[in-house]
Length: 145
Image 1: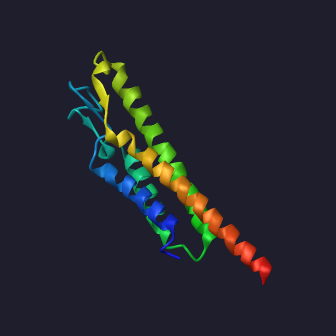
Image 2: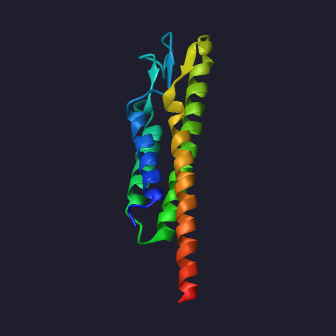
Image 3: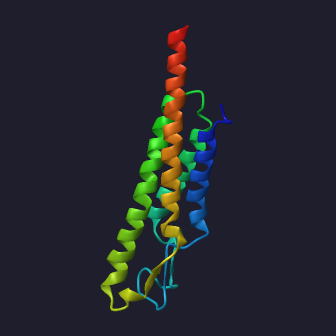
């Protein structure tokens, strides 16, 4: 059913993905060429990050409506979990690969955006756990009939 707790968890996971459009990953006190031209590194600065964010949010939100097919819902929740793991790893790799090559590498400060995928990860894992519990409950009820 759509009113289950995993629907709330998946909604929070999707909101965490889409809120990355409003908060930066990192800022810098000085202009660092390539990444920190505007002294802010956000999701729109890399097409890879943008794609991971959009796909992760869409998968999380779309899996809410797959309550009739719990196995597919669980698989899509695992995909959202992978996206929430890849997103900060790619962001950190891009920031510190490109940003630390200069002498101003110590001027890079992380912001809330680098931690929001962790929120999405936690709620995706919780949703997967509760989807699995629902599947086990339905299977146990089928054995009783």
